[in-house]
Length: 79
Image (cartoon, rainbow, N blue to C red; front, top):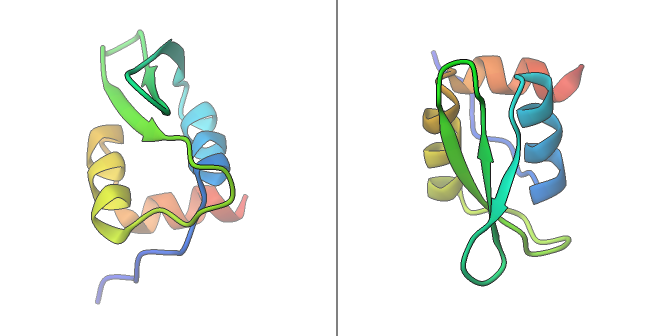
C-alpha cells in the first residue's frame, strides 16, 4: 500500500532537493524557481509561496521530476 502525500511547504521540498544533489538553477517567471541536478540533467520547478502548503498534484509532479517515489520522499523528509 502506498503512503499518502505529506502536507509540505516549499522550504521542506527544497531541503529534500538539496539532499538529492539538486541546486538552484534560476528564477522562473513569477514566484517559481528552477532546481537542477547536473549529474543527470533532471530539473523541477518549485513554486515559492512562503508558508503555504503545496497542492497534492504539484507535489506529485515535483516528486516525479526528482525521479523518486513518494515513500522515498517521505523518508528523506524525516531525515
